[in-house]
Image (cartoon, rainbow, N blue to C red; front, side, top):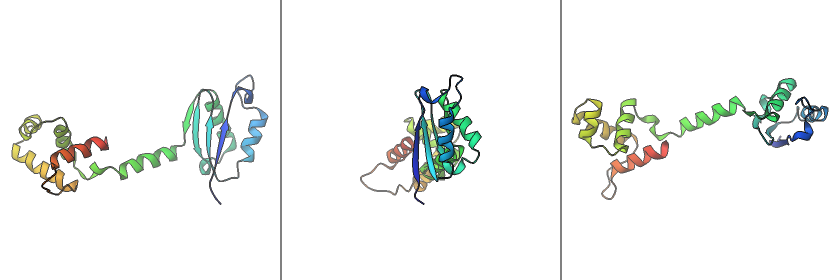
Amino acid sequence: MAERLIALDLDGTMLQRDGRMSDAVRQAVRDVAGAGVHIVVATGRGIGYLLKSRVIDVDEFIDTLERIANGGSVVDPELVMELVTARRRDDPLAVLSVREREVLALMAEGRSNAGIAGRLWVTEGTVEKHVRSILAKLDLPEAGGDHRRVLAVITYLEAR
């Protein structure tokens, strides 16, 4: 079955005076209960994105719709985890150690090896080893026309 997107635009006419969902809205929710869909809900004050596969309890779903209709925002927790995980998977800095990230952050501030060494209370030789490791882990091979340290800083800034 192809995935479908259902958009519910909840304006004031769909709510009863006490802020609860009208019977018509409740019926519409029950009608989509069996479909495999993504559900986007919007009001003038709130918005929500829910994965239909996670909507199991109709009453809980209706409560969520009511929160959105009353100005709240809801994003399905599974979707949030997927987005966070995707961000982690694509992070080019994930291969770096914590100390290498610190060195790279100081490089991005424009510090020299001596400046980094003074800031981290290590020797310049240690900083040089970290920089070599960073360049290797970021797969920035030596090339005549490129300044690898600058490329590493650009990678750092783009990953933030």
